[in-house]
Image (cartoon, rainbow, N blue to C red; front, side, top):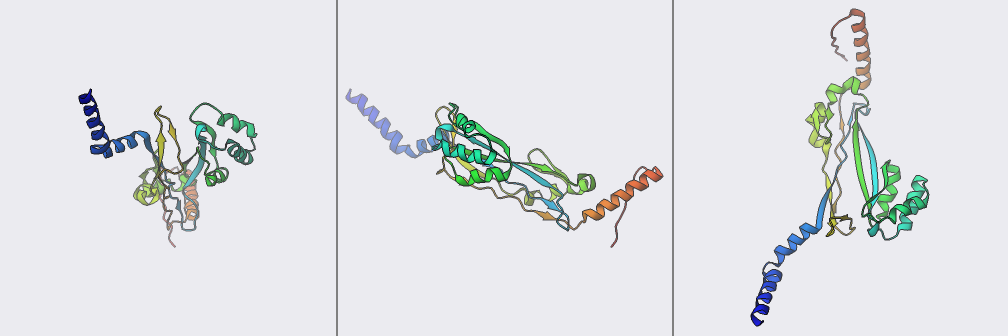
Length: 231
């Protein structure tokens, strides 16, 4: 018995003291997860500030009901913003799931007040979709991005680093069941949005030139046309 207890004591000493830091770090890795907070891509403008790209920003608001300390306050705030009844959100917050969507595809003006309140257990996710309002006029010069918002052609590709910005991150807690919870005291790095770029091109002149070229193509039945504007 004495030998058994001695062996057990040595094993505990080995775990807690000799290899304590190793097992501590291993436990942290298993109980925490890092989630990326994507930066919003910078926009491209013509010389007069006319946007050649746009980011459609929308927000998802979700929650871990078990971590929400004041469900009534959260429900009241969302109800004021969306016009939906408080009971609609109370029902969601009283659910047994560890994750539930409260609202999806919300404009920034609706999500901003919730973000500033810092409610425990409430998760705010920001999303962006790239659009090109002048694509039919200047698409080849501006270029385009892929589904991961990386520039693949034109200005989007050449200045991808400046436009992309730097993603942030947030550390979340993972339970023994694999569920992920948000803790307000865990480390978080806010994303740095990308820089805007202003070109020397004038989109109004480009539009006029395009219309004139299309008109001449129709009149002459030509295969293609090229034009140069000289100031």
